[in-house]
Length: 550
Ligand code: GLN
Image (cartoon, rainbow, N blue to C red; front, top):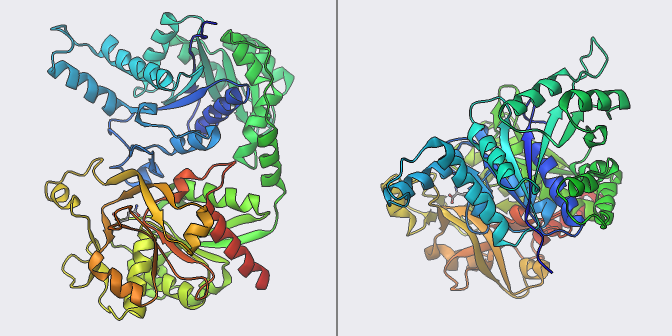
């Protein structure tokens, strides 16, 4: 039988950003996958940056890292979690990345002497990437999320690419517009006008939405569905009600209430005899809704704020990884973000950490608040509070141990004080030149590397495997010159690179501490809804045991 043509679902934003386009795209992907189609997803970010790696977290939120080392948008994390896939750099593009390739090809005479133009050559490069991402995994369905909102200047070339794809494959492209239907408090009624305007703006670039996802505080009534349908030129059943939800894991189940899987299959002329099997999702959504017992976790680190708001988005994968492990253990993580500067200056007493069930130090960069973090780690170690350190959180735990247990009193990292004598954490050899040449973009140790796990350790017991693969994003590492001294003092390097040269996991034996473990890599990137990460699960279990004793 001839294989069905690949189908493309473009998800675009109308009205305003921040109403869950990423979760919508992920959920549509999960639904099409649950209907038995091989599905992948692509994120298009309209900014000039080639990747997200050089951006400040306050600008961008979390930088998500793929197996192949691509530093990308946090939505890629949502796709990986919702689709259970490992994506690669073909699944992510930015304006910068697209232009970079067009210009590279022009310099290599690959356009054969032609006048290379913004249109069509830039959209054509976007289309080439979209098709390649589908072809690489022989996808039946490719979900393409176009960042930004219709009507803005930045994403216009990508909307043009979408329009051109519809022209190229008239039966194989569908457009989904994620809109917002406000209920102004003084009016007390749902207003569809912004959606109507967004739909017309989309029409003005030659695109007609096939489906409109109407985000709102409450479900859409029939009257609003009919109104959106007539003014936006689509069938009322194609207006999907997307009310606010408590948990993102409710979204696929909610969409299916309005039969989005069947609708998209019809539009795309996909075999429609299949039903959407969302049993797993329903189960997860139920757990997320019903777990009540709180697990209080302190996240100690740099405090990222934007105006009056704390940007918890910076740690979105950490939060999801914690939630997933916790849900499967019948508890609900409650995170408190603690600014380590307050511990450093004495504004907050470190002893206040006693009330938490676990302490987590996530990844980070630079020197701000470092001594405060080290104090928090020391407290967690001495008071036997479960501690989990991710990347910088591992390096700082090694420094803490070196200073207070191995007699290396001046221990620090080159990142903190390059002049210091006892650089327990030092720059990786291959990173030195890169930094000297100010070659910052995409040059850290990035992506998946294997690690060997030592027998009889917490890590080995958690993973139940001898070799694992985990994702990295760092320039510094544990200095080998201090490994023996640290081990003699009781620290166990339970995970190393296969050569034994790079320290990947540091831990304390269970006999000394219920859970004190740090990873040079970022386990949060590979936690999945139906396969929580084993180290997060171990941490959560240890924290749960402490909460039970209190
Ligand atoms: N700043 C540290 C390094 O570059 C840790 C990086 C991180 O936490 N992602 O090695």
